[in-house]
Length: 325
Length: 284
Picture 1 (cartoon, each protein chain N blue to C red):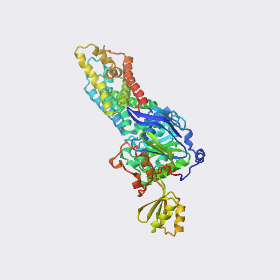
Picture 2 (cartoon, rainbow over the protein chains, first blue to last red):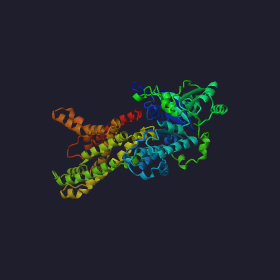
Picture 3 (cartoon, rainbow over the protein chains, first blue to last red):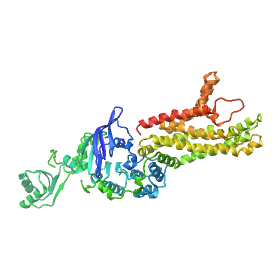
Picture 4 (cartoon, chains in turn blue, green):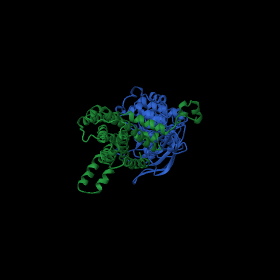
């Protein structure tokens, strides 16, 4: 359990984190999202005491991180895969960290095995690839078998196997009742891994909700119908009060009517259907629409960019934000 | 996206057996000391530095022993010369010790290791004391090897010239041990400077400045008949160090041993205390 209360960090006149309050609960994977410079890493660094908050307080399992008797057994953190001396071997690096808490060598070897580093454990870290460095960072985070895990961009640089492994690891730890806080810019990966999402923008919390709720409230679900008898079905649907968009030949995007009802309507109207499916909004879509105004380092391409254009190849007019969800 | 629906919380963890080591594992200062020893000893640069110190020092002792010639032939001169031969290279090896001290601190910052270190020891200060302690121990032992090695190995040459001495002779033992103490203390002072500057280049420049350049400047000021120069000189670590690791030549006693030790300790305190305050206050 991580609890932040009015957490603020200012660097001179720049406010990196602006009075954020949130709780990361055990038994779930919580995703930490936000554009570059939104304050995610600074917040994570404050949780483990690397940065001192200008104001506010953050506690882990009830007390500030530094006040725990065995900090590594409470929290494991991967904040920066490069937090390693390049002249040291992976094995020595982990053994040095383990020694502080008298964590035995057997555990060091265990996390080396778990993270697939066995074959390079005695090589100097300076020669590691990005992915290997990432695995070493994860190994260090797991060292104390901690109750809470904080992973900043853990899949950065990992191969597909590694990405899958991190997902299973995070889900497995959460299923064991541990607290997992994870940041990533890979929305598809986050959608598969996280149960709950906190979105940060310009140092403030923009959203804090379960994934399904977040996607549901910021994007709209529509039903896609492919049929050779477009006009026929369009009339039948309009009679039901459904909003219908016909953007491509033989294709209708319907909102406001459940998928079952559309199927029944088509049957009773004798319309042939080639496709009938629900298209739900993606996390990426939800994220982009939430953070559009809060992107710190906006590129020209992103200015005036409408995420809906790419998200579902259907430029449907979707205005009603709080459609019953 | 509640795919796995992890409703189990604490009970779920009880099901998976807690590893047996968890109960015994705790953050202790002894553990931090061990950690710092593993860190220092697992870097090649440490062994290169210490190896260089030993080779350089022993070689220099032999060279200086070969060129030593007796002047008065007094027993004070014999002890002084033998100790001087043993400790001859300290003015150079102390620069290597200082570089090592700076790098032990700055290396953590330049590589990012400091973030791992401070996550493991979030109270921070134990790592500073442990690092300083481990560094002192390594340099002290290395200094003992070079001082005693240089002294004992050259006795064959020196006694042939009538300049031989024994460890039991007046002041010899203290001066030789002090060679190790001085090397360790200089390393700690530089370590403090490395922690303050967080920069290898910056820390080394300042250390070399204090050890080598300051004495030269003060010496120059002394030649201009500037009276305080003589007093100032005795407050420099390299000059005070000489008092610690030499036995007095006839008639010349500039400073008592304990005064010299206090001066060098003072330099260590003056760099380590700000280092501690800054480590505690700054973001890592």
